[in-house]
Image 1 (cartoon, rainbow, N blue to C red):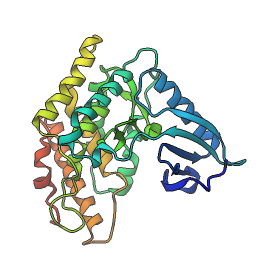
Image 2: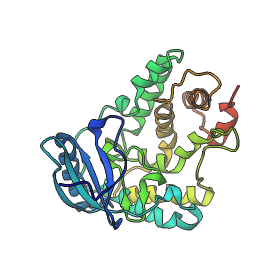
Image 3: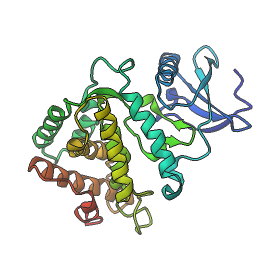
Length: 302
């Protein structure tokens, strides 16, 4: 495979072995590279998932760049993600793709047989390592409570980062970091993860949040999830919203430590830590987590 005609877009991860992403000259295809032991199973899983209803781009070719680097080619899912499209213009189109994704998650013919380690999935060990000042026992209590409550929901393949930035008009992208967890993790991520960016941006103004679900959009997405579950005889997702939100609050803090006091990244780290503490206080007290409060409790720069 000669990559010289393909346009390099970006790396696939944090290390060279993770590979890279390229685009064809006509923009109709995307090529992904990586280690054969990781990339080929990834392509096989994506093909199987697509065959069971997941709205994923079609993979048209799988092979080797050379003896050490594998590749696969998929049809482009579009030029922009819904995170880069005004949600007033594209929300209902995006929600239809989400509906297909959620429905496919509950396909009884393509479900995980065992859950992944939830603490590893939310990067809890990383949070503990980067934030030794946090009360580990307190956080473990919250995770254990969440884990026991969401256990009544069906086990599915979750995307893990199911935001508008990973949904495009042609389907869902970046599904390779999936995890086996109860249904609902992706629903909360879609609806509320943007609130963890509700702190001032690098210029110190406004906030870093790029989109927002107003009440109609929030209700539409939540009702969609509940209806899909009810149709199949499962418990509603709604009562477990905060059970998943506390997990996202932990995940949001991971890999954010930055020790240079006064910088944007330092303030973002401290902001998310204060938000997590607020979420823990509310959750363990049996009170609702109000994400509108995040800017106030985050107290950026304090």
